Figure 1 (cartoon, rainbow, N blue to C red):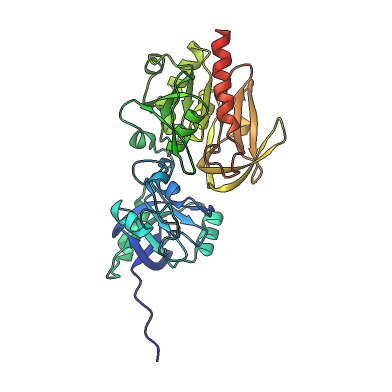
Figure 2: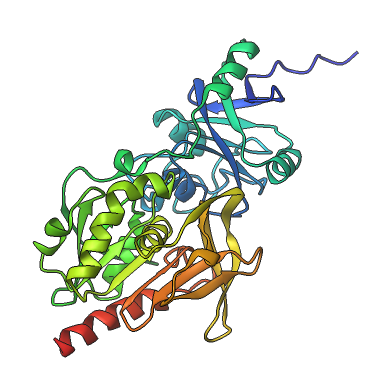
Length: 387
């Protein structure tokens, strides 16, 4: 006679009532969000702290999550922004020389819920076929769940369409960013002085994007998402950077697009955008954005640069995309996804204004896309010399 299976301590309830049972870790309680999947084999701590994952729960398709532990050096923000994670195998004790703690304890301290023991292949197929569902994730050590209430909570989630989440994850005040990129045995490089002055608009900026700007020789000042053109120009910048971030670009565009248009009308400043910043720039130029079925989330996404034919292996995290068919005359498509042909980059003809959908700072290639930061720095130096 065998012992009965242990009682589940967590469950994931989809809005249609589909329920997955598993073993909880991290904080106890309930989180309600949109569910996406991420195909990365590494970087779970970076994913959880990426502000672009606000109001989302992440299903990791790679089964070994938690095996390298956690370290403050890998955090992309001061706290996690993803609401929870779904994994196949329970996190094991960390085995990595950089680890300062383990994933379940970190999740508990930061109030995030995890569920292990899930058939993530089945769940991923569901997301691919039906789109990113609204879900309720519950963790209760006693295994007591009100499934009807959880289903209603999932159904009642407002979703990301029409949601401006950038204000909630943006900085409240301006600050100077000082660190460059991390290197083995040396940590984060100190910022140099005398380089091009960049104003970075924070729609949910990842720290490593700011580090990459510093490593490209820039002096970086970060402003809130709601900054006006006057706020930007008061810093006397040589260029403007538009960051990544969460939510519906059309909603954030209500205040971001007028600011970007104002800058383009009044100045010849170089402008560089990434992810949500790419979408903000596209909207300011007259293009449109659309909600994707299951989005792009991972570090193995091939993107082709049209002019050169070069294929870059990139990191992506977005559930909305720029409609390439809506790009107006004078706005050139520069990059496309080789997974589905969606737009991944643009530039303005005759002006130092460009953007990409992917994350060139994440370096899965590992350095395939860093040239974009160097291109931005070079554009600022050229503009300075011309001026």
